[in-house]
Image 1 (tube, rainbow, N blue to C red):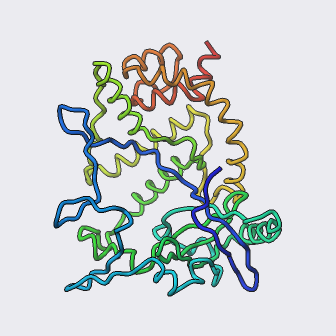
Image 2: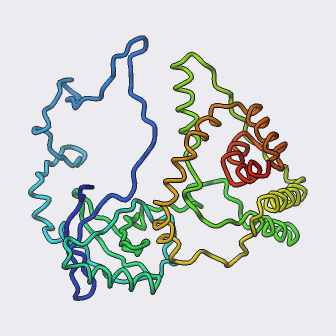
Length: 348
């Protein structure tokens, strides 16, 4: 069972709900150890005194604030004494429409859970109210000697807490980026075609359809180097679109998107047709069922991952997958393991 990273009371109005905070995400990023070239010796970072070069025991390390000409040492209990209540409470000061909060303000996500079964009704009441009103509760909380601005939101069948950036932490893009266009005029015909392309490429949001392909390539490279094999080089990035050819590129993109959609049998999702609020809950409920199916396909997927683009194309030809001649290696791989590959296999 996961370990709570924070415990306290979530309050809104005169209601206080004892809760625990659990990390909602994890990183699957590949991490390399530092080695000395020519050896298997790891190079580690140590807690060393930068003046003497000697390692400092953990119990002798304190916090010091740089005042410019000297450091002011602050003890952990002194930090707890200045705001004892803030480190154990999360008070919702107001509720705002979710659509009003710009995504740039969100940082990390945590799950909120009641501290006991006796608080389940209060928890469920707040969850249902936030989901029905499509609002988030704005609060502050102190964790690990730092105050956070947070948003409490209904996610599926749980309450989630999103830490947020303070307003002065969000940079003004017009100050930071000198190459932003200033009120560039866009032709109506170009805009209409661009909107048509957006609609042609509109899809339903399903996060499980996406995975870290770069990490997979890194693992393939590591395995190839271990076994003395070679790895096929990736395709070069696409060339930048010439402004003169912009309209032609837009039209060709729309035609390609519509052709691909017809071949896949998917209907375009028109503007304004967003997924219902229960989408997250439905995804969570069906995840267990999809996991079993994924396990059955994993051996075939691993086999296909090791094939070159030419070999994948031959497999696609045998399966009579439409549009294969213009597909990239990743698209061929997806087609062979996806619905089109299964449908073509059944037809043959």
